[in-house]
Image 1 (cartoon, rainbow, N blue to C red):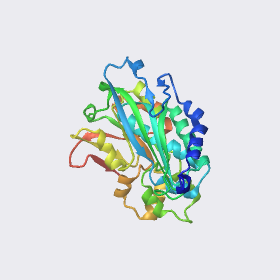
Image 2 (cartoon, rainbow, N blue to C red):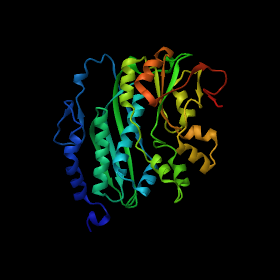
Image 3 (cartoon, one colour):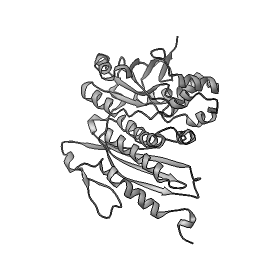
Length: 334
C-alpha cells in the first residue's frame, strides 16, 4: 500500500504548486527574499525605516459555510470568487486596525484535490492580493480524505499588515457628534450562512441565490482614499455579530451609536431571509450586515469629503451620541 492508495496524491499536489508558481509570483515585490529551502516566506522590513514605531496587525479568518452554498449551486466563477472572498474577509479586518495589508497566506484543505477548482481558487486569491498591493507569501494545500468528503473543502487565510503605533484606530479618538457612514456590501458577504443554508431550497429565486453568492467587497481602495483625505477615526467590519455587536467595538464606553435604519433601502436578499425564516428584526441586526459591509467614523465636517470618495456606496447612517443606557447602539425606525 502507498500514500496514494490512502487517498493522498503527492504528485497532484506538486503539480498544483507548479501550475501556480508564476501566478503567485505576480504578487511579489522587492521586499520578498528568495529562499531555496522555501519552508517559510521571508519578507524584508528594512525598507520600512520611515516608520517611527511600526506595529504589525494580523488577522486569520475563513469564509465558513458559504462554501457549502457555493458548491451546491456552482455558479460561473464560483471557485475564483471563493478565493477572492477569503482575502477580502481578512483585509477588511486589518483595515479596522488602521493598518495597510502587506502579506497573505492561505490554507486550503479538501478531501480530494481537484486541480481545476484549486487553480481557480488561487487565481481569485492572487487577483485580490494584487487589488490591494499585497504579497501572497505562502500557504498550505492539504488533501485530507479522512476529514473531508471528496467535494468538501475549507478555505482560510491569514493577513499581516503594518501601521504606525500612533495611527492605530483607538476608541478614545471618537467623540459625541462624529458621523457614522456605512459602505454598501455586495450581499451577506460570508456571515449567517448556517442559517441561509437551512432556508434555501429548489424554490428559492435565482436572483436571491445570485445575491447570496456575490464576492465579498474588499474595502482597501476606499479605506486608503479615506485615510488620505479625511480624519478617519475608526472602522467596523460588519461581519459575525452584525450591526449590534460590531459597531460598538470601535466606540469608547461612554458613548453610543445612533443608527437610522431608514437612511437606506435594505437589499431584497435580506428581506427574503427575514420573511422565509421568520427571523426577528433583532436577530437580523446581530447576524447579517443588512447591505452595509463596513461602517466608518469621521468628524461631522468630513462628511462631504467622505461622501465624495464613496459616491453611491456611502450612506450616512447616523452619529455618535451620549450613552444613556446599557446598550451602545440605538436604532431608529419609521
